[in-house]
Length: 374
Ligand SMILES: C[S@@+](CC[C@H](N)C(=O)[O-])C[C@H]1O[C@@H](n2cnc3c(N)ncnc32)[C@H](O)[C@@H]1O
Ligand code: SF4
Picture 1: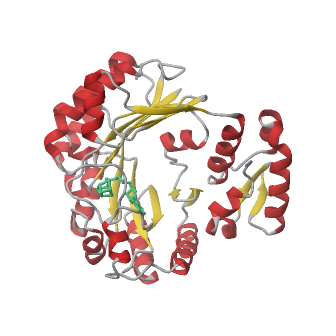
Picture 2: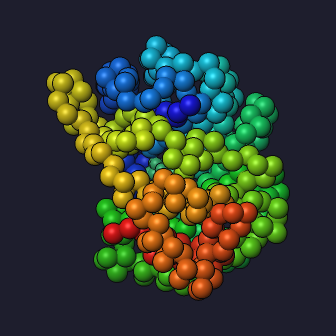
């Protein structure tokens, strides 16, 4: 079983923090969707199987595209892949796009899970982020999703921005808990290059965000979520009743997936490919039969590092037997790094696996890199 990712590279407006690939020029929708449909045919032999377990429409903002575009994409996928065993079909949506009509249409095409970009329940934070929606639209959209009988959905929240006090962050969690949201992705605000936020800081219009604020709030997020009965199954992901995001969990467990659309990535166990992050160049390349992606064959070292990186971010951790059996050449590196991190209590042993401790999660990138083969 494998997964499919479709990257929908359009947004109504640019959030100040975001450097994902998107364009606000929605006039190019049909040209880009046509090109993605052609890519689906061109890349049809990439996966080791045609049976698909998860389909994920991400972006950008997949909830902005028309019914016709969505149906064309799904029809094209159905020609190439066996979608009869599809267990999860997630659509990333912005609250202002959630309407009764859209929900009906999404249900009709098979969507069974939403990832809703709430980010904050405070209007002043939404304005600071330059979001296209208000907090009241978030409440309304969650209500509509429920009324349309979608039981499985997630919301995104961001902590650690300039305006976010610890109290506000806890209020955001409190609201999500009150609303009985089954799954949450909670991210620390990252100041990415080529974003408005980055330039505000560079030009002195805003102060840099202190690293201590991020760590402090992340600690509080983890504590509060545990107190509210959510399982932190990945650094930024929490759920109740084992409602893990199947598509992303498969990524983290090393399953193969193919990604279509500008900037989409693909992985089939041996090769990794990534598409050009430019809508016009992507369409032009596909139209002209030119190259629109780069690819690399993973070395044994890449595969080992990938296993460590994705495994340690999850509650399933990394397993000594897997390292010994599948990555024997790196077993010494693993043991040396592991001993050091066990000693500093950043990693602990749990049910025959090694996982990050709460302290380790606060400095996850550093801890993980200590086990890498270089
Ligand atoms: C690429 S967006 C796509 C979803 C949808 N367009 C939306 O905004 O709701 C996925 C999520 O990544 C998170 N994100 C994007 N850039 C981020 C940043 N610089 N720092 C923290 N979180 C970020 C946001 O929570 C966002 O909802
Ligand atoms: S966060 Fe979502 S809506 Fe905002 S710019 Fe990024 S992809 Fe678009």
